[in-house]
Amino acid sequence: MIVKDPLYGTAKVEGVLAELITSSPVQRLKSIRQAGAPAFFRPEWHVSRYDHSIGVMLLVRRLGGSLREQTAALLHDVAHTALSHFVDVVYEREEEDYHEQIIRELVGKTEVPAILRAHGLDPDEILKVTKEAFPRLEQPLPALCADRIDYTLRDQHLYYGVPAEQIAGFLNSLAADRSGKVYVKEVRQAEWFTNLFYDEVAGFFMEPFNIYANQLLKPAVLAAMKTGVIEEKDWLGSDRMFMEKLRQFPTARQAMEVLAAPPALEKCPVREADFVHRVKPRMIDPDVLYDGGIVPITTVSEKAQLLNKVAADRFVQGVKVLGESGK
Image (cartoon, rainbow, N blue to C red; front, side, top):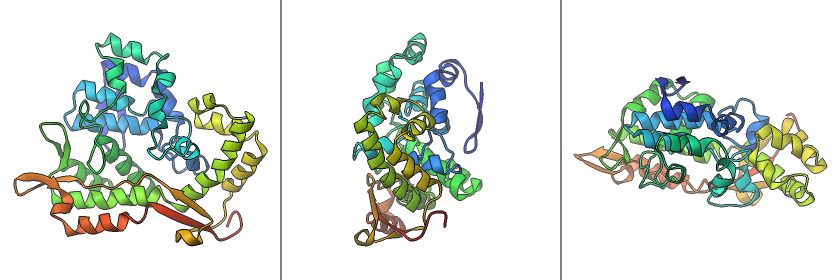
């Protein structure tokens, strides 16, 4: 099987990876937008959980990860619900980990465990991602990892036009140490990614329409769940299936009509805001090769220190509604 990716190019995959890619749980990720509920109203925010999963798999391979770690990378988002992290907004899960709690329900009865066992892989180990087992794939903040790197590069390239040559330069600067932990070989590249990461998590994630859509839809979904229009099992389908069912609830339908032609919005101080959204604070401090050792970038870069200081205040964001719908 040949897979093509806008960040990593063309690659051949075989065996367990090819079988998993064609499995129903992985194919389902094509119908889950990475940007969640707001992306349902913004066709240009088209990156899917499938796109990201393929990308993370290829990045782990590029970083020298084993077949086992590539397999875990491919499946790391397989339990995401419809509308991605919007479920965490609705249930107010600060760690944004609802998908991790339902992986057995969503994947356990599918063909995935049998595929893994047929290739000598333990489903319990592959589906439970830890930094010890899969160091390239997953690390706690503020460290780098393939998951974190891919969603940042992918969104910023496809949505904001970050040039492919800049991304290629950064990818060429990446390496993994003997333990598998990812680091950057050049200070300037570590600074570049630090800035880009905050453009993603404190910029795009906190973009006014993202905030507005999440906070407008949240009470409508809660009300629909209370009346039984939306059931917990509905989170296990696709974005479109969930939203079509939600549309049956009058309050939700009204909110969706507003979001289809939204009012003018702008960021503002929380005290002046009509809507406020809090996301999990995501601070980054990439390890970098410096003077023969590997150290956090903030220990050798004043620019990185400043970027972190500015970002720390941006994870609570207010939005003010300025104008009528469609303007």
